[in-house]
Amino acid sequence: EMMLPLFIVKYEGIISRYLGETSIQLDKLFEHIKSRRCIVFFDEFDAISKERGDENDNGEIKRVVNALLKQIDNLPSHVLFIGATNHQKMLDKAMWRRFQLQLSLPQPTKTMAIRWFESFTTRIGHPLGYAPSMLADKLKGFSFAELEEFALDVQRQYVLGLPESEKKLKSIVKSRLEFWQTKIQTNN
Image (cartoon, rainbow, N blue to C red):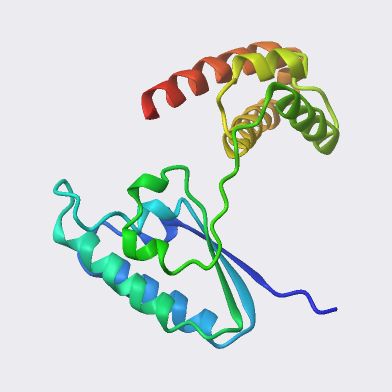
């Protein structure tokens, strides 16, 4: 059984502050993927597929959404296109019609978050300084993606601070918890 290549597209790699540049980036991406059997995963899809009726956006995002709709319509059947968003209400209505299947993933329960943290610590080979149940309590309401971002942030700070960070893991986790709790409250 042949594995299809996976292309992960993050909005910061596509969106440009220069007018017209975002559409050019999208054209290059779609030209590349059309020629092969592959899976294309757009993370934070709402960043480039916002509702075109939004009065707060300039004309550029409308042009980008129109270009993206055309590109998706012209994809060959051997390309599997996946978009992920935490803000489904922001997506343009025409974009929704392009997807044959729409899945909604619920927020993780405390038990699910505990299991996720246990799995993450097994993956990285050391604990995160606090019990998974305490982390799950502190990060209640976080999506799995946000739990992953938090844990990777802690791991990055830990690795960058080695060897001293081995003694300071709890303080690293505590400061990153404060940061992430503030970040999520600001975004919601």
